[in-house]
Image 1 (spheres, rainbow, N blue to C red):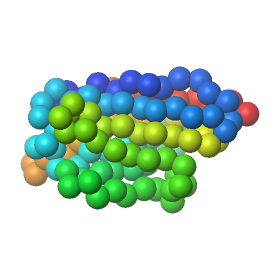
Image 2: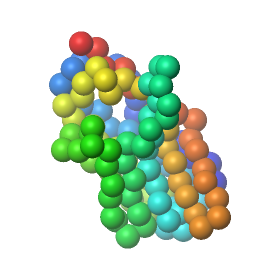
Image 3: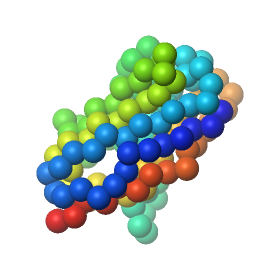
Length: 114
């Protein structure tokens, strides 16, 4: 499975961005899809995940500001980000899991200016 992330960019504090991640195969077979991020000098951390059935999980730091969704017909997972803060600045990585495998996209940079 190949994951192609897009949608990153430069935005001001309080702004919004939507990230997209397209999978190269039927995403309905991907049990969990999600987004992680890695800021400079920090470890990669979970941002949000969504199961095939639509159950979601969010990091406390993004709850109420970010929304994850997936469209199995388009093999795509989205991350809608609102009220962005400078501390949201990071490379955002798309992730997908099957029963036996774990896949990562190439990452897309989100920069939030103060």
